[in-house]
Length: 413
Image (cartoon, rainbow, N blue to C red; front, side, top):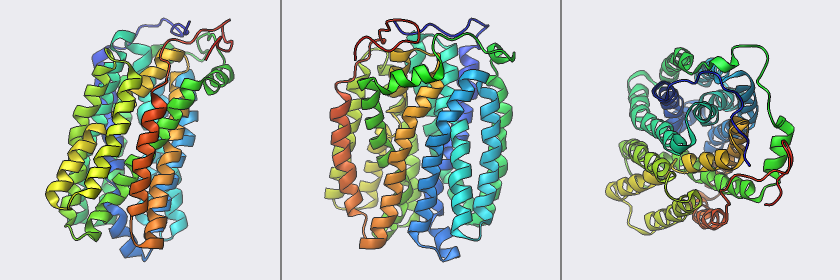
């Protein structure tokens, strides 16, 4: 059966884990959700194409995915505190560099590589590892929904705040202010300092990292979850980064885009919480399939309907319900199948697939816009991928994996 918890030190209280974890995710995710607001101010001020900005954000998502694997490994072995605190420092450096970079290359290195690495250490994979180790399985999906809802609230809170900072201080000063604010994550991380990681000797494990990774990558249900997460990344990052410019191209005011992103964040609070709560009672594969199919329908109707502020707000509200609601059931399934010993690492690895999709979504949005003057092709790709993801999640097996021996490969798939 799935592995038992890796050690039995005193656990953190559920309230402490959720309060500190939610606050960290609120700030980290909230800031990143507003990056689309900087696309036009930065490209116009620097004389860059949209592809230049989009490529940097694409690299950010890919960097987030790559570093997320290693952040998860370190957090599983030495605890989350060090990883989160280090990520906060990188985040501050990346935001300052984003403000001061004079060339596209430096912008890609700071807004892309540095901030991507920072997000790997301050978001879901690491936080969910703490949740998995400290909250019982009967409340785990719900708790993950609460943490994901916090990220959504961060979008609702931070996107209008970032828009206000840009309009009142200018885009460069706004980034510098955020660079200082993100350091608040460091004291928050103290609340996630687990006693089981205080010593230099890690707890005994049934599996090595290599064994756990080999087992997961050969398991068909893990592959299906990765495929679905690729689509999730493609859709949400394309929409989050390019929708403000798409709406402005169509003649709508920048305020409409700001309100739309805020609505996505507001309704995502409910969507992620509901998805996490339902995951305690309904098969998670059915929840995931429903989310992906619904995204395809919502995008198709949005493109077919006459465009107006009202249609944008309806679209944003519906997409908000579906936005990050894939995160709690996906991560809960990973813990349910493989156990919690290597949860942060496996969550980081599956998130890497999400970030490859994010890279493709944001980068293709910039490339195809520059080539065709339109985002239409990418919208159609997003619809087709939604149908694909819905279909691929239906066969996922959620039962704990059967192992022939500790650390051994599964008996069946």
